[in-house]
Image 1 (spheres, one colour):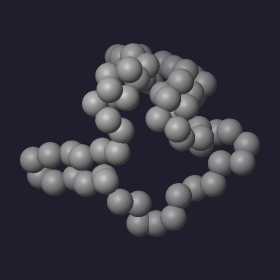
Image 2 (tube, helix red, strand yellow):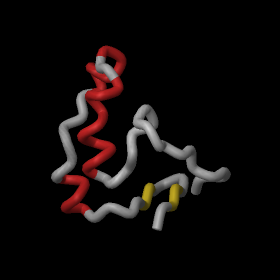
Image 3 (tube, one colour):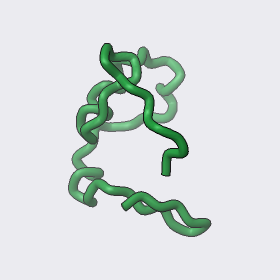
Image 4 (cartoon, helix red, strand yellow):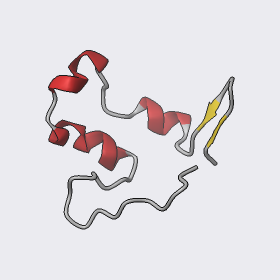
Length: 62
């Protein structure tokens, strides 16, 4: 279940999955090539938007 309220954000991955995710450094976000994000996409089971075969999600996305 994914849900955002004014006080909380609920996501599908478990606490263990989030803790094991690749390191995120907001200071480097603008300097990184899209391929630097691939470990995060694959860790959570998503296809990167720049890969062949990617299909944009239907709208609205909840």
